[in-house]
Length: 124
Length: 107
Image (cartoon, rainbow over all chains, first blue to last red; front, side, top):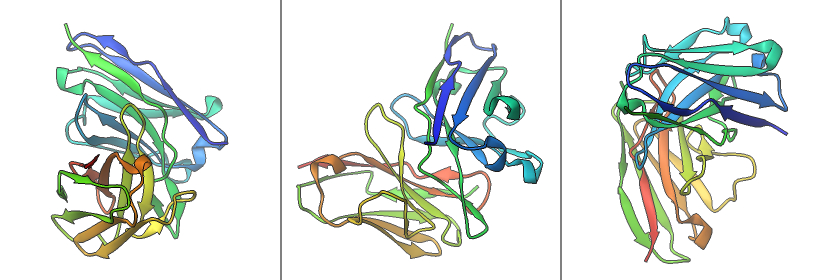
C-alpha cells in the first residue's frame, strides 16, 4: 500500500528555517516524480515544487514564490523526500502536502497519492 | 504562468442534482488538466486526470471533459458525500497552477 507521511512542521519565526520530511512506503521513491503542494489557512491549493525521478537526475522545479528560498531533496536510502525552507515569511504559513505523480503514456499526471499534510506556521 | 479560472466559486445544489463546474485556462494546455475534491481538514483527492480519465477507485458519477482552454467537471447525481470543494489544476507547463476552487454546498 502506498503511503506518504509528512513531518517536521511547526511554529517558526519570520526569517527562520524548517525542514519538512515525507516518508514514503509501498513504492520506490527514486522511480517517481514528487511534488510539494501547500494550502494556506482557508485558502486554495498552491503548487510549491517538483523533484523529478532518478532517471531524470532528480532535477527540480519551483514556484516563483519560493524559488531561491526552498529546496527539494531526497534520501533514497531512507525512501524520503525533503523540503528545506529558508528565509520563511508569514505568507509561507500553510499545510504542506507531499504528492506522488503518476506515470502514464509518457506523461507524469497528478495522482491520488497525497500525504496527510503538516502545518507550518510562520509567526513571531 | 498559466492562470486557471474556475466558475462558479460556489454553488448550492440538492441531492440528486446534476452539477457542472467549469475551468478555463489562460492558454492552451493540451488536455493536461486534473480535478480534485477536498473536504474540510482532509488532503485533496484526485478525481480526474488528462481532462477525462477517471482515477482508479473514483465512482463513474464523476466525469471530465473539454479541450484546449475550456474544461468541465460533471457530477451526474449529487450525493451527500459529494459536498466539498473542487479544484482544477493544469500540468502542461511549469509552474503547475490550480484554479481558485468551487465550493459545492447543500441547498
